[in-house]
Length: 193
Image (cartoon, rainbow, N blue to C red; front, side, top):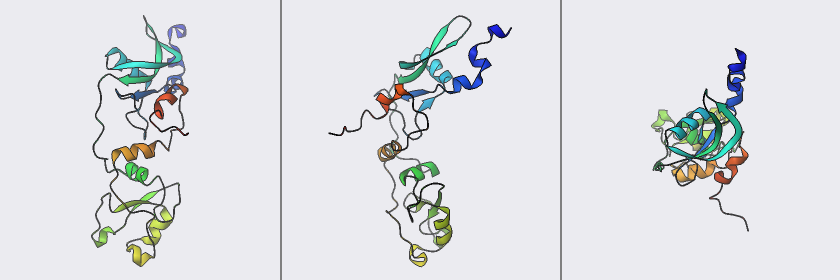
């Protein structure tokens, strides 16, 4: 009985290690942060539905009762997906805009966010009034204004352009980058002379 069970069933972690990089029709990643990746199952499904073309493959295969399929490592969409015109106001995008750096002291690491003009003083939760902050700076500032707390911002809070967020995201690669992805991740960056 066990001889008929495919290798990815016997080793469930085996196939989790084979995500596919998803490129838009212009051969750029749909996003850099988080990197546009699909599980291998989604990539194979998209191939069979003729929604993507396979650009690169892993050396490993998956098997069905009648077919052996190489796992795609890079796929490109056949239809162009228009990039977002505005950046969604999310905690993650806020931290990305501020490059995961406290906008008061410059610390990196565990971040929270802070309202520059506190909400209790009429401050709103907008791109222009919320910044990344480390815990100690957030506690120090509390519900005070910057002047009352004796603090200042490293740079003014502003609504980011989605292209700017993508470019910042390229500075923070994920923990795993397959070799077949490298030609597609930074291909539009300027080369150093």
